[in-house]
Image 1 (cartoon, rainbow, N blue to C red):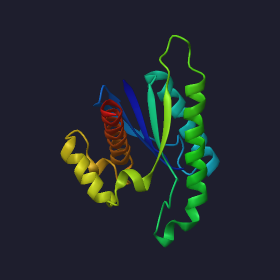
Image 2: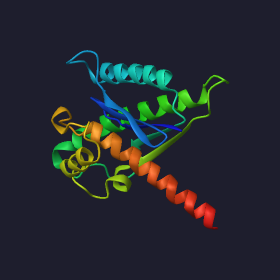
Image 3: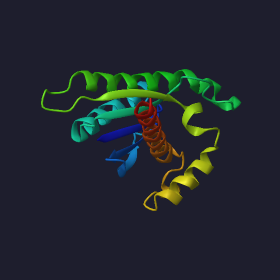
Amino acid sequence: MKLLSLDPSSTICGYAIFNDRVLAEMGRITPDKRGESALGRVRSIRRQLLDLLLEQYPEAIVVEGMIERQYTRKDYATALPLCGWAMGVIYGTCLTYAGNLPVDKPRCNVAVVGNQQWTRGKPKKERQTVTAFQFPSYDPSQDSGGDIADAIEIGLWWLAAMDRQDRILLTS
């Protein structure tokens, strides 16, 4: 199974691709032009995400969404509506992709996970350190916002959640 996990925002979208539970690719989708308006940035990210989807054809996509309280720091308060809108556009893009696959491609499931679920309250720097320990090819100095680390950790959380669900189904 191929899984794409996404850590979206209105400025950068971190992503990780897992092939049969092995991290195969990681990166950031960034807007084409610096200084673009929010609408231009999200359009650019959406277009590049579509290209990635059509190149990879994932069978599952998990996207971080604003299900619960997203930020507690005061300086993030004004960015919340914009971030929520960008997450919605990215989630909607994934749903549209999943609903319009060619018949010769496997079905794709799309899930949303809240940050309170997968972070378990760990600070971003700690998540980056754990990711670097698990995956030597991940370089925290090239991921200042932790977007790639978060995408990887979202994917790992989802895979573990699917394992737990499978065990429950097998034992019931």
